[in-house]
Length: 115
Ligand code: 5GP
Ligand code: ZN
View (cartoon, rainbow, N blue to C red):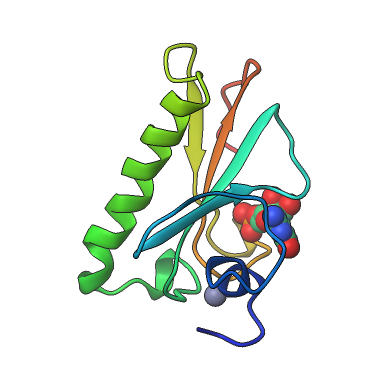
């Protein structure tokens, strides 16, 4: 765990995140500044700063983030109407928290965009 990382603290239960899913590998919680009616972040419990910092041994862990996103989308009742999963990486993508996270966005029409 990185001691100065807010997502490490939420995953460890040491910060007041609105956690809705937790297992031995990942944690999911509501984004503090939602941009859609459903805006949930899914993070590994292990600190990995970005996709750039992933190693091959993290492959299954990052796959588990997507699998848990799928479970949460169903649980939130948005799986059929649709949702977006995104992982911002680096400055041009606007990454602001340097602990890998998957955004799960749903509950409204999400315009197709590439940037
Ligand atoms: P990024 O821009 O790095 O892809 O996304 C970071 C996200 O983390 C933003 O949507 C932001 O609102 C959210 N965020 C930042 N700090 C906190 C926090 O302390 N708690 C929660 N729940 N979300 C946070
Ligand atoms: Zn971290």
